[in-house]
Image 1: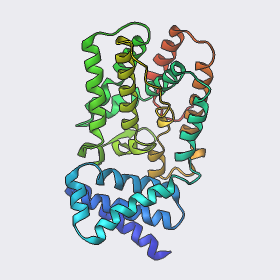
Image 2: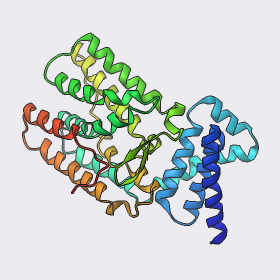
Image 3: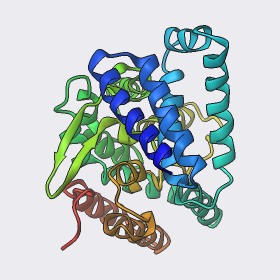
Image 4: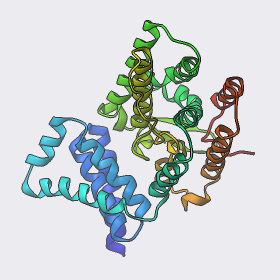
Length: 304
């Protein structure tokens, strides 16, 4: 046990050194070591956190991946083993896995419009966090989340301009590109009153908040294009719902059992309430009112 603790301590110290030197290959290895140690001792939430961070860095660019793979045969095995371990963890009974499954099951009872509104309500709750993250160098893209929510809500009711469509597409592409940039995993963070700082890399959980935001925007753009050309509509996707739980942040900062974290409990209730809301015969005015309330909400703060 003492040896395991020492390995974990050494890995975290190495992690800080790699961040300082911008040694991304070394950083991925440090995350991998932490993930393996966590998995070996049965701490599966931490294993998911660290191994997915390692995988995200390995996959961020060809140069990083090739350096990792060609460094030595042993290093190549690490890349493969990291992926295999992540696959194994996807079958574990964890909030990381249970929430997406629950959302998929609930979505089976909704029509496409209800699913899209459900997802849009979730994005609205990321606006305040996005505004704060946008102050970090390289994260300016998040400042446009509020504008994007308003535009997408508008587009459900009336056609948007070609310029607006283009701006939404640019935002979609920029969010996707963020995950492959050094900005994403370089350690940038913002203060959280009364809690540990929130890192940009904390968005990596639940398939990646930035990724799911990009996916939602892409699907919406394809919807608008199909409507304008009288083409078959793309199926709505529910994967955006649940990303607002931000489990990586709470696991990384040692908050304990995820299901007991007050902010996660509050967010799960909002998700449930949103589901009931979209099933209740709502008007666009009611949707707009709810979105405006959510845009002012900081989901990292504990409800008082």
